[in-house]
Image (cartoon, rainbow, N blue to C red; front, top):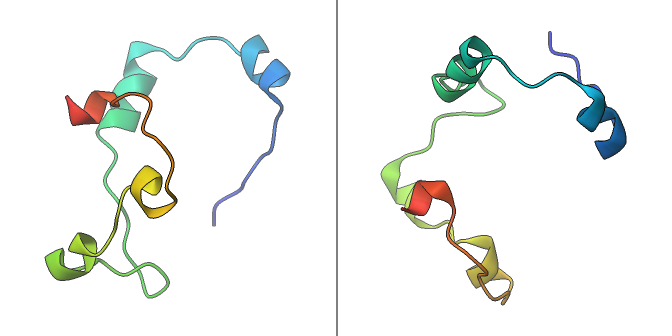
Length: 67
């Protein structure tokens, strides 16, 4: 069971920064597939378009993943 907590940006700024170990956990997390969120095939993934392309929004900058 997962729990979702909603906080404001002001509350977020009050939190301590993530430790190196916490960042490592985030970067190494693997998706969990189930009947509600099945793994998609390469053909299904190829049908997705970037938000800016699908909604006619100009892309401002590349993300770290695009580099």
